[in-house]
Amino acid sequence: MVTEMFLREYVVTIPKSVPKRIHSVYASDNPNVAIGDSHIYRSFIDQHKYLNLGRGGSTIPVMDLFIRNYFKYRTPNQVIVEASPQLVSEIHLEWHDKNHNNFFNINQWFVPKIYFFEKGIAQQLASINSWKSLKQALTRDWPNEMDKSSYWVNLDEEERLKRTLSRVDFQEPMMGTEAADNYFSIYRNMLEFLLEKGADVCVLRTPVDESYLQYISDREPYQASLQQFKQIAETLNIKYVDFRELAMDFDLAAFINQDHLMPTKSKEFSALVDQACYQ
Image (tube, rainbow, N blue to C red; front, side, top):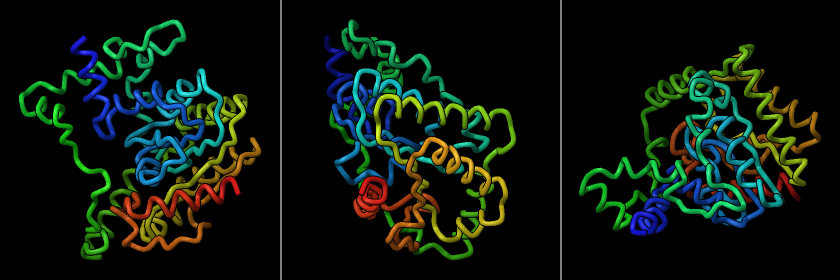
């Protein structure tokens, strides 16, 4: 009883954590969802229309897992799905489902939602292994996710470009590989699942800064991956929105780093995305 209360009252409040994300699947009744990795998480952090199921490092198999479990017993309305090149990068392909395949073991109508038996939530207990971590949990002393510095705009230009190029190299899509082809297949099947459930789906290319755009402009794997996401959307008659089409100033001050929006820009961006997708 005490452990169950601790999980429900404290563990599932940890920002950006797997338990908090899984708790959203069990507890939310929002038919509108935004799904993706940290790009979606940051882009939709300051809005209330969409349940933000974006989290850092979310791979396409993980996105698929959360979508299928969230809408297992729900009817979707508007669902925004990320379509960005890093989703088929080498590190994403290596992570695959990130051992999430054992989660949602209690996501059945006839199974009581006891979080102690939900592997994706209960496993977090292992990380609360000191008085300091226990105190942090009990006082909910978590970092403020809305408090991000604008260091990117103040960074020396040479250093900023160096970091951007490093990120671009790290995130380069592994196009033409069997693993990437499999990811695109999972992605398409996920979209088809949503359509079959009656969702109004919108596929979104998420923001990066100008130097990032310049670096990828002549890199064939990046352009091919973007085209592949767009082609999947067009084949399924799904709206595709590219952030560059939005009436928003994506200057350096809009970014935490080369590919994540400042929290102060989330409300504006998400509203423009919603308008582009559904109005």
